Image (spheres, rainbow, N blue to C red):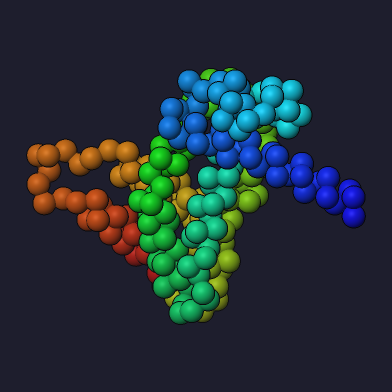
Length: 210
């Protein structure tokens, strides 16, 4: 019981640091936030910070993982296993786009993270952990719906599930990042973000439907 209590306190302290870091990163951008800033907001010492994180980069990676995990949970929550696989996939992609509208700052963080850590060398251990998360935890949340769509014949029987879900992940993340952070040029009259969203969804569904 005592071990469990200590573990709960440890997890709570760690989460409070992540929450403080996330708040600062979303407001100022992680490139300008220091460990001192995080400690001041969280009300902890640097010694306490280093009990949980070796460096600010490790905290940045944790915030990225938390944002993507929350996004995945938001998307998966709309799947009530009602209707065929095609309809369920459509609802999940719509939820994906809705998440980006509700959490524009988080999407902005994801964009900066992807650009910065792909461009510059970073801790290999952290990059490996993040790549494992993407491959094993975050990209696979569509696979069961695609598989069931193939089984109920609403989706093409010859689909490569791994390739299709990878494409949907990459294409939809690219879309939500773009529409969350930029405006359509004023000279493109008559075109809205909703138009682009619908075309994106139609292209995916037209490709996968049986």
